[in-house]
Image (tube, rainbow, N blue to C red):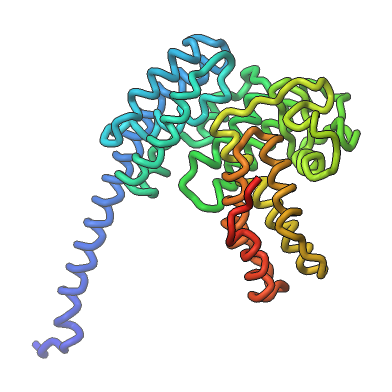
Length: 325
């Protein structure tokens, strides 16, 4: 019998290693599936309670918020991410929810993510598509969908936000608006509602396009209407989670507007920028300082190749010294 070549001699060993690797991968996959099943079982009762509170008001939203709050207060609990993410969604619940509980949930959110890491947070938190699946066929107000749309960006660990979840919630909000008022129109631009519109529902339940909301804020007008619905003049209330989201969105829009102004060769002075920040602050009920400090952060995220670094530095310099109001 001829002697085996070196390649032939190595073949059984390599096959054994490959087989061992396949067994290991299979074990890892099985472990992952068990973890996902465990996460699903943990989320299920929370989702059911939240959907019942959202659609029927039972359990009472304040009681549910308290129940979720104490569960997410301990970052070591396995169910803390699911409870905390739903606590961040609690502004969408009808009725009264203790704002202190919501503010605590924002702090818990950071503590849990720090303890388990962003990857595990994303695995264990309640996703918007999971919630929407539970809400299929249920009667949910456009306002609730709109607030869920605000909250999901805060609950997500990704820097750019959960794009798929945002699209799904945006579509759900637009559909709810079209179903409730098919003949209605935006009070700012007077255009009728379409299924692909990006809309914002105020606390008085009047609806307007997100772009129109930005134009309304930046347009010069009576200061007496700041923070009020332009239709019914009722004060507009936002919870801390929605305010946080709107602060980032409006600061990002302001940053983009500054870049466009700079590209056009007509840069704004510090007082002009402060006026814009003041309007945003009064409109959403956020402090001027928070808006002022958010804009330069959003400027860093703007990727405009047409704007040289020197001009971007000039924009950043507007915020290098605090503006006293």
